[in-house]
Image 1 (cartoon, rainbow, N blue to C red):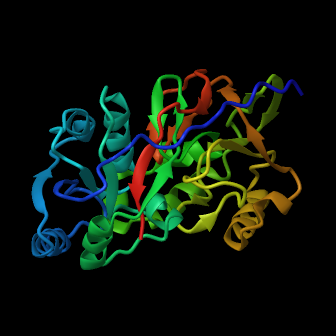
Image 2 (image 1 turned 120 degrees about the horizontal axis):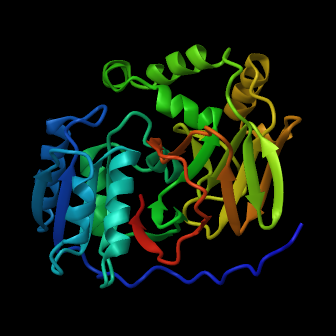
Length: 307
């Protein structure tokens, strides 16, 4: 395998040391959204002497523009939503020419992998107190082509499930909508191989995931060798997506031992590409159009507020 030069990773761009002005942006269509939770967060921030502005999104993609155009007085952006909403915020923050504010999460959404990854609190008062306590960690990102991602980009059966989920069913039954899509797609044999080029080596598999994160689908461990506060990318590939193999992979994923399964690889990578005729792809749980864009670490590092 050809080994490329490993990039040097810096720390996050400097953010204000004290929380004074918080912008909360919430997605009211996110799974598990509750106005009461939002109200409790704002009330507690007010009790703690923090100026708080609240805005609700009305359409997909709006959070990108909001994050990109935040007032320079905002020192903290709180995203109330799932991983898709957080992804939008990240895309806007990395587009800002000036140093972005710290990012905080009010966890809603179907799975909210980032909240599981960072063991974030779900109680509104605890989130408010974490924002004011300002315990900050670096948030390392990836990008596919010129599109930043928060957690992962994948191709193959994993992405086909994301494409196959009925949005209305997802709003009604949450994660079970993914289970329904898995059962519907698992017995189809017309899915193509994923052609992976990783640091100069080319091979085929059935599922390929380039990830900055440890977690997958919530609290499940995809790889124990990284996390969003750790620089660099991991590539996890699965060679067999027949029904019995998928069942075994699901069990091992639940046990945090996926890489011990035959036909699974887990490696550090610098640059990856996914290709293949009719291969489907997804980013952070949202379907995307197929692309052979390079997948690599993003040069900008954000700051995330943790518990």
